[in-house]
Length: 268
Image (cartoon, rainbow, N blue to C red; front, top):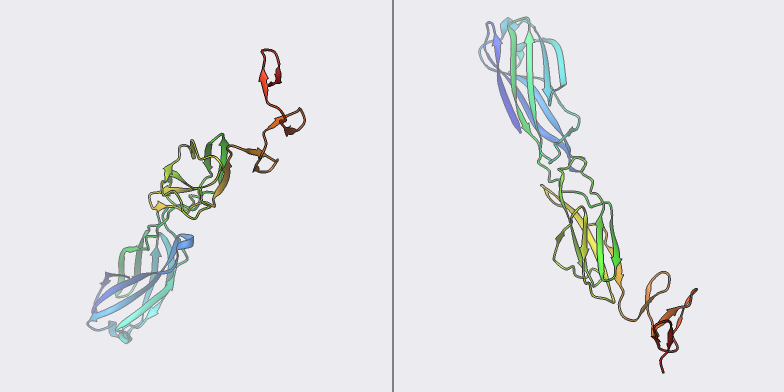
């Protein structure tokens, strides 16, 4: 909470303080915003009050550069030790990209009677939200032999600090445990080389900014073929026999062949 006291210009009468009180309200971390509650009042410190005569005053309150409250009326200060001029809550104020925010607050009065002016001002600090990145939009993998190249989609940086880097890690036991080795991607890509054949690997990526590590993507899965495996059109499956392509389909090889210099012939 902020309490900001300012002087009041008085011609005749007692001593007065203009007090502006502010606090953070309606904190919405998901929207990276907060509101500010405020109250402006006059406090009579000592002395009398202008012979019981009404005093015309205008007042206003400014938060983050915008007028959030104002009024104009007459008051009989003899009746008040404290006179509340106004109180309310602002609309939501967007924080900076890194989640921090400080806003200037001020209150002022002016009049044509014994009180001719006064002001109070200060700075209200709002919550400093942690704003790590969201999860990247996608994680894809392409296999070449026993190498797997992982590509990360972009992470949303709306109302968040810029991305410093993208990272990737892997598992070969369906995510029961991850490798624990987090690799930095170059241009949002990373290639794992010489993976174990005959295993299914999963990969996931995340983004990192000055606020910390973002959430991981959903994992992308791929099988690294090896040994007796064949592609059936949708998956790599074990095969008990060697195959050859006859021009239109894969068929079993019934005999071994050798190259005689001009053609393949049966081994004898």
